[in-house]
Amino acid sequence: MGLSTHILDTSRGKPAANVGISLFRRTNGAESWQRVGQEGLTDSDGRYKGFFVGGEHVFVNGVYKLRFEVGLYYEQLKIDTLYPYVEIAFEIKDTEQHYHIPLLLNPYGYSTYRGS
Image (tube, rainbow, N blue to C red; front, side, top):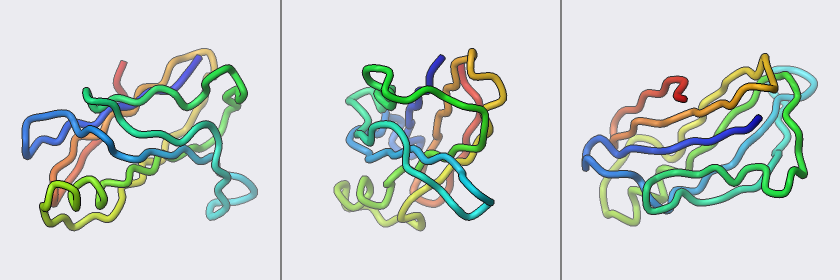
């Protein structure tokens, strides 16, 4: 059905706006990745759901990863961070479901879970 994400900067207690995001699908082995969907930036609420605008890509079962450009986000805020980027890998097993992959972020740590 689709994919969405959002980022909450837990150190600031605010959504992380203007973070670059791209989506990849694993192909031909564990270390081969192909970019799929539209790259974009999180909105003012830290959300992004425009990966598949116009239906140009249909999910297939497989392993995907989201890449969040958090280093640039913190650089713009003039805050040091350990992470230049964060990648979250996840597996699509049912293409009829919606997958929401949130990122809880701070300059020296992060966590994720499957949202709704």
